[in-house]
Image (cartoon, rainbow, N blue to C red):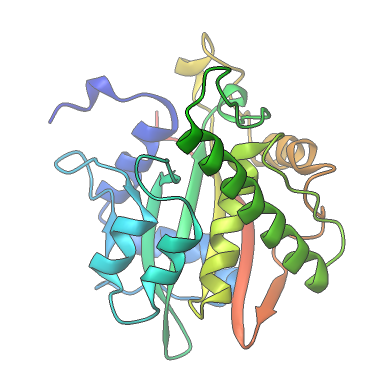
Length: 245
């Protein structure tokens, strides 16, 4: 498949997983979290030959079938036709002797940071209204639990919805016993996207923008901190990689 159809963070993720030293680069990104990624790790997307992104309800039972009870995760969030996050990149990993998961949310320019809440159509069906309420309850429950570990979470369905649902899913995995690393990965220097949004100039620029994005929603001390759920870690990281010209 030609890579000409892909732009922005989607392209850079596919370029990353195609690299011969992908596992080495990925380990450098997550080293601070205490997990390791082996050469035998499973990841999606696989590259340009298989560029499909996956939801956890599909990836988990397929790639980590016996680690946790995926029915608990899948029943927690509304099922089809309600949407759950499609992850830019999912990578299996190890934490000590336990299997875990790295969940990657990738960005390449400011417009890829979504500040808005989840909308509900005025003519929404009863099923859509019920799903909307359930999603709100999922995020609120995650927020309450996280605040018991570290004060300063203010996540909700109606603002910063993309950020909130990513944190909520990472929390749910850790709560269910699966070590989870949520990696916000900024690709820097992509001037080809300047007509869409302001590119991230460098790592410092990306860190400042993520700080502004998180402000009032997540504790600014969260990145790099381990939150423990009955012995299972949850770690959020904010890292960057320069693109290759």
